[in-house]
Amino acid sequence: MTTVTAAEFNRAPSAIKRQVVASGEPVVVMQRSTPSVVVMTYENYLDLVERPRITDMAAWLRMEEDIDFEPARLNFDLRAADL
Image (cartoon, rainbow, N blue to C red):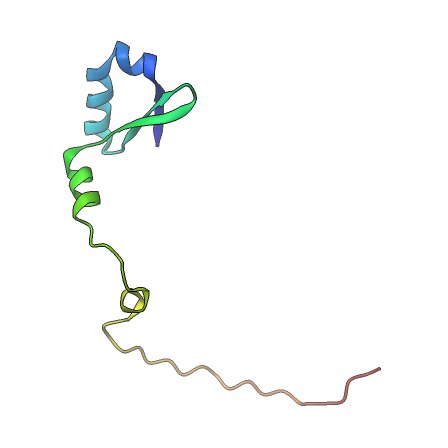
């Protein structure tokens, strides 16, 4: 993710906007070494806003299809520990 200072953003906001549109990647504007604003495309914004919220972790982890899983049996000999 690209970062620019607030001064760089204030000098050329149109250039930052063109960069975001061309790359599809957001740009973080830093104010005194702290992120203050993110410039992103409207499509990326909609993806964030309309993403379904995860409220039930078990439901989120549940798989729709069954998977055949038959691990190979481990064969090993049990023996007394050497003390």
